[in-house]
Structures are given as structure tokens and as C-alpha cells.
Amino acid sequence: MTVLVDSHSHIYDKAYADDLEVVLTNAREVGVAKVVVCGDDISSSLAALEMGSRHDIVVPTAGVHPHAARDVDGAALDEIARLAALPEVAAVGEIGLDFYRDLSAREDQIAALEAQLTIAAAAGKPACVHSREAEDAIATPLGKYASKSPLPLSGRPAGVMHCFGGTLEQSRRYVDMGFLISLACIVTYPRNDEARRIAMELPLTALLVETDSPYLPPQHIHDPETHVAQVGPVLREQILRDGPGVLDDGVQIHVIQSMHAGRC
Image (cartoon, rainbow, N blue to C red; front, side):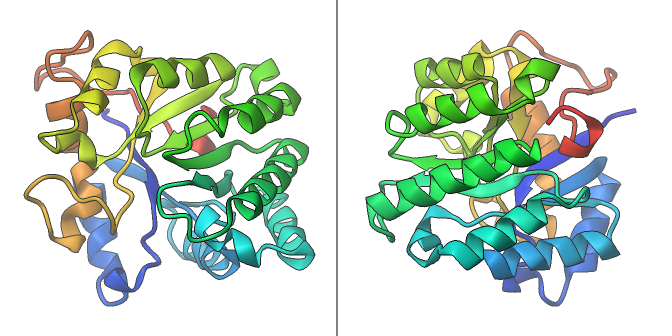
């Protein structure tokens, strides 16, 4: 049986306020078994957790996005640590560095990232990492985290590089650290040759797919109700096209596994 997981979404967003059930039904109908719902601040982390309590397809994570790093204080970190300790919370994230928009000062971003990586290591949870225009800067804190996390020692990934936007060479560095590389639907964008190169060159065991919904829809798809459901077609048509794992319609795809299924 085909097992697909949308490894990163934000379906607590107001875009889904009136049709979340339709979104999840559409996802199930195309074989999506789990949808990882990533918190990007305390409020959304709690929303993801609550959504997971109502929908068995939802896998929640908890963390503070680098855009909100300026608001991270001791109380926020205590709450992320509390959530990370819950068995139903699969990962710490979405955390990281965003040097493209710089909505928080870079020193605040780095401090928030390092503190949350410490929480992830202590909780034995993988990190869901956002890195934009910061692939080199983020390597050092991620390397330190990976060396402290108990996950790689047990053969499990240290985390996921979400919506990876770096180069093939950089992706290999993170895979060597113990991270999986997640490719979003922007792999369908005509100018995103590097993402397709990564999909071709990395082993399938190092790859995840995601929608980042409601953001970054596939080329020519702008319907929020079907966005999450596109994770399957993107995998088949883009990531596996012409690559070492080319599959025809008669072959079952079992490439993507959820954090709850033991890959992370």
C-alpha cells in the first residue's frame, strides 16, 4: 500500500478555517496517511497539538519560527520544553534562521535556534529546521546539536531540513550530519533546477516531501482545499521523474514515512 506523508504544513492557518475537514478528506483519498502540522510560535504550536487530538491524521510539532525569535524569552522556552516532552509532539520546530527577510535580529534568531536545539536534544526529539539564505551560517549550530542528540546513535534522523533551498553540496553536508532533506512543491517551479537536481542525486532514503501549505502551492495549483493532497503527485511527477527511483503506475511508493512511524 502506498504510504505518503506531508512532512510539513501549517493547516491551522485561517485559510483552512472553514474547510479543514475537506482538506484532510482530500488528502486521505490520495493516500496521505499523515500530515505533520508545524508550530511557528506558542499559539500555533498549541493549535497543532489540539488539532492532533481531534484528527488521527495530524502529527503536531512545537517551536518558534525565526521570524518570531525576538519574542522568545524564558517563559516561551519553558513552554516549548513542556510541549516537546509530550509523546504526541513529534519534533521541535519550526525553528531555524531566516537571513532573507530578517524579521528578527540575527543574534536573536541564533539565540532562539540554539536554545530550541538544546530542548530538542534533551527531549530526544528531531528538529524541524527552517533555513533561508542561511545554509552556511546554520551548519555550526546544527552540527553541535546533531552530536548531542541521542537520535543518530540509534539510527534515527536528527531532524529535517524543511523546504530545503540550498545547493546539492549543502544538502549532502546536512545528510552527513544526520538530517533528512524535505522538498516542497516548489520543486515544480520551472526555475527551481537545483531542487530537481537534489531530488535526482540524493538517495531516496534521505528525502521527504512536503506542501508547507497554505504556502508554496505547486505550479498552477492555487486551491487550498487540494494543496495537501498534492504531495503524492509532486512525488511521482517531479521527485521520481527520470531519477534513480523512477516508478510506473503499477509500483507502490513507500518512500515517505512519518515522524511517528520511526524515521524521525
